[in-house]
Length: 103
Image 1 (tube, rainbow, N blue to C red):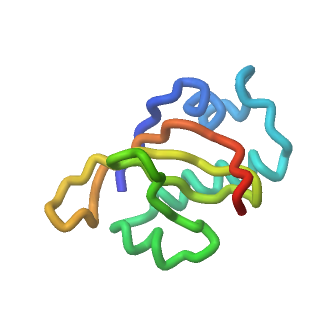
Image 2 (cartoon, rainbow, N blue to C red):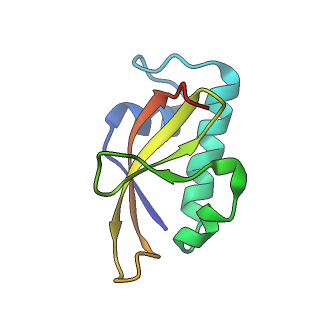
């Protein structure tokens, strides 16, 4: 699936390996790179759903916002612009990196 970055700080973090806004532990940073690569490699949404370690889920209160797990407390949030009626393929826009306390 195609990946875009709506957050310039997360784009910089991915392309340059650092960002003033996100001072992350090394393990979270490594998972961030790995997750973005997994999102890029996905052909359909089913590739994300079938990987239980991602804990891919829709976020409540949003139309097309989803998240994947980086670590127990960290989530990568994204929006998906669906390209087909079945909602299986789309453009993933990376929006935010957030702490998630419910896991």
